[in-house]
Length: 117
Image (cartoon, rainbow, N blue to C red; front, side):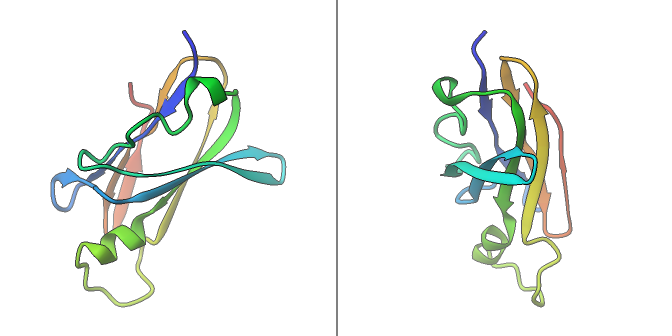
């Protein structure tokens, strides 16, 4: 099976997909952090295509950076600045080819993730 990476974001405070949330993907190598992709979630809270497609897949360490604060402010969150959650980084490894899915469950005051399918 070829390797690729997908993600999606669910807003647990509203019980809906998080549409319009910007996500950046970085490849980590020691102290180096190289941006390899950027996407915005669609109405289903997903990226339209894999954030790391088969033709660009490589094993290694990565970071997904979810711009949660921008999304929360756009959605009308009225909270004092700085927000409790602004940028949410998730660092993970991919050690073999396959489908990796890293979802984010988000609220203004907490988040969780897991390796999905």
